[in-house]
Image (cartoon, rainbow, N blue to C red; front, side, top):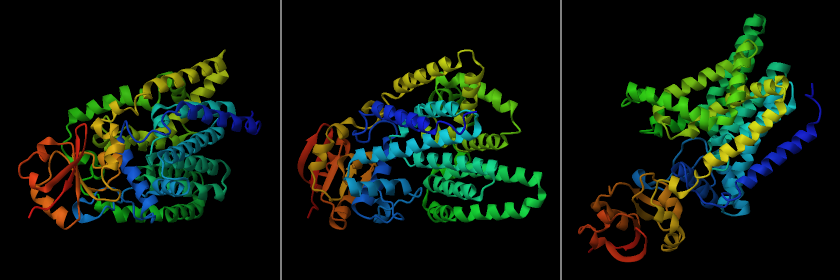
Length: 487
């Protein structure tokens, strides 16, 4: 047993791991948003940008669009991650590097949390360290831990919740339980689906009740305390969810338009591609499969883990149409238990294989190579799926119009990317769906003086010409016009 020895060397090992990981991402740290899920990253960056520049009230997350009710407020998840990044930018300057370093810090805290959790569940800190290393190189975690998404904060908080609730289960100290409640609340605020981790508390309490029915008073008191901690999260989502009109997350598979055939195709896709190759990775299959064997052999000791596995799969089934094939970051809640199971396998290899340490060293090296090869193009322009001219000429397009001017922007099916790259807010349209009659109102009532357009279908319409006072810039397919209201 080495559970209480050599803490310093493991701390230094984690520092080396983070330094190594940072060096691998050095070319992306100063790169602005592009690549996979640029729309969601751009939306997050608009929250950060508006907190940093305009309104620092954490209750008022803002985006770039004034469409509809003429207000750019958009309350979704509680923007604690975005607000934190914005406050750092107020101190260190408005730069994407600040945000990426903030995400790297949050992700690293998640890896430390996995190490801490595994020290509770395994007999060896070395096995816990190897598990943390493999977790760090889960492809989707490794990519998104440098990416402006609130899910990384939610995941990190959920991991630390697991650490403190398991520590409470082992030692029965109230302080550990209260800390678990704090982290569960933070995880839920940052991203609502992470509330599902609270099922672990219910299972632990259920076991305690059946073991000693006289403990019902204490259990009820602790359950009430956790509910009190969660009140801010419940209050936030009760306030904002009624405004999520048309959001498919609210209805999931019950929203209609989703066939049984597509359902099973998606199940097959996740089973064959997503779970084994993006959440885990090919080199990790051996410890993961061995970990399943260990888990099943010790199932009575890990009841809480079975509960977490069950509720995450229920979440997947209920949101399968929303997650689809593209929204891999929706699956981050699976990572904690996937790597707990992997950790069980790591320890079995280390303790029972003749050359266990050599096998694990090979697995670690292979996981780095696999993840780097798989994710190397994820932040490329080719993976952005948007008009490349907006990215290539973003600085010139941004400078074509004075800062702070509200503009008409088309076409942008995402609602965020185009506006983010040119750093302009205003009225955003897609598929040429800007009624010409609206131009006059936006110019005369809303003070719009400029329009960005990558659509010749729209800006060459005869009825649009009277509103175009001058073409002031043209970069690739994007034209910038000064507007006027015709007499």
